[in-house]
Image (cartoon, rainbow, N blue to C red; front, side):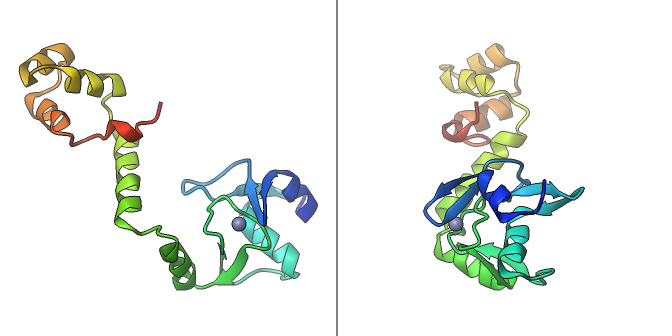
Length: 156
Ligand SMILES: [Zn+2]
């Protein structure tokens, strides 16, 4: 796409000052797009266009703390520490948030299908769970004790 604020804005959902990117993102949810054949971080491109900077030297964070936000109002140039400080104030490193991320990661990387996890937990005994699913005793015990997978955050 052409690097223009207007064009980028038209690819976002506008929420107050925030521009929430509707298209491709990286593994952490940061907006990415191809500009003149080069894949770049959209927030950085917006920052450079808005401030008239040729190449921003530092990292570009978002004051609102929304990963998907590429708004020039929220964007700021800062060190990793400054960006982390904002995330921290917004509770990104809290135990609760961390636990959620870990559970999501486990569910994503687990080779055991969600239906099997449910079957193991629904069984009246470990032996029954083993017979129904073919999983090992240790896996059945782990799943039944609530470890290995939290079904509350399973993706469909
Ligand atoms: Zn924002």
